Length: 127
Image (cartoon, rainbow, N blue to C red; front, side):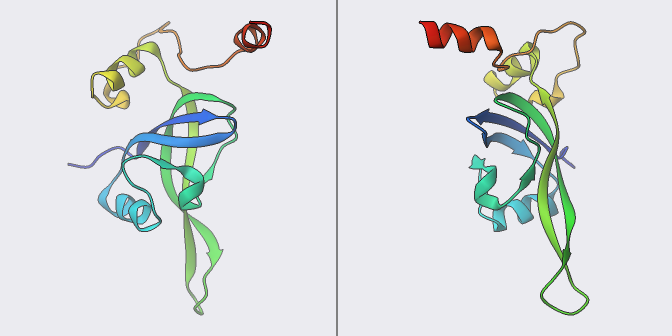
């Protein structure tokens, strides 16, 4: 079975952490060979990623061309996390049950979770 190339990412203070992820075998091997595991910081595998702000997101995983390699005619590749989308309450509930968040059918109007808005920051600063 081919898994979707997706990850559940928590970003705190600008540092993304892959909480869970699934990928095709060749992409999984690429991530594991770069130092990834079940849970890993995106910086630890030298991944490219969007600057999405702090929060909890689902993201697409890709391996992309990163330019010429060390050997003549070779190319370097890098793991890239893109298309960051705030997790919905339904997706987070699926994750808490041990299911893949991306297997949850989209629900219109489902609130997002993990988005840190200005009112929360103000409450923390004042509180």
